[in-house]
Image 1 (cartoon, helix red, strand yellow):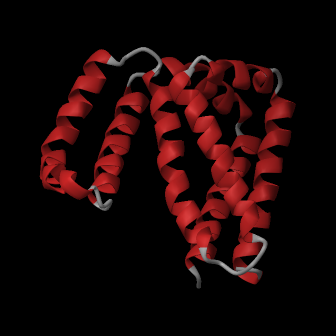
Image 2: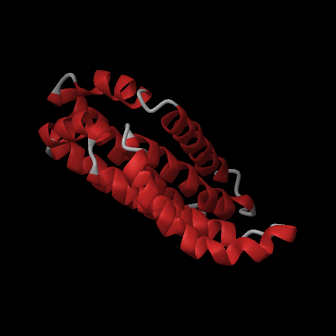
Image 3: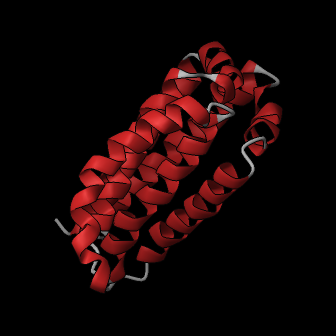
Length: 180
């Protein structure tokens, strides 16, 4: 399997799982999306994941004269996690979700870069949509509530959107299996 096939298979499987779960328990999804922006522990956990991932990503880059400072990232990342948990408590969950979307787009784009199929553009567009959404969530986290409030009006809408997400996930799995 190519790296793009593996990445697409993982994304499709996650989309199917989340979509079917949303379709089966819309009440839980409504409460979770409503409470997520002010949640403390998801923000702290996502902050830790983001900081470790960002530190790893920076250590893999060639920074020229700054390469000597890479060893300090292993000490700086935990300090940033503690300081972030202490002083960035305002909508931390949404901001760190945006950071995760920004970080996750890079391996997806790297996997799609050299694939000869034109169908790779589906995954590329998905990654760029994640980048735009991630930037919005990091810079203006109150947009999370503006984007999710219309989706939470009824259980039926949540179920339909969950099934739509599952259908997209099945499409991604099919792309991974037969195209990439």
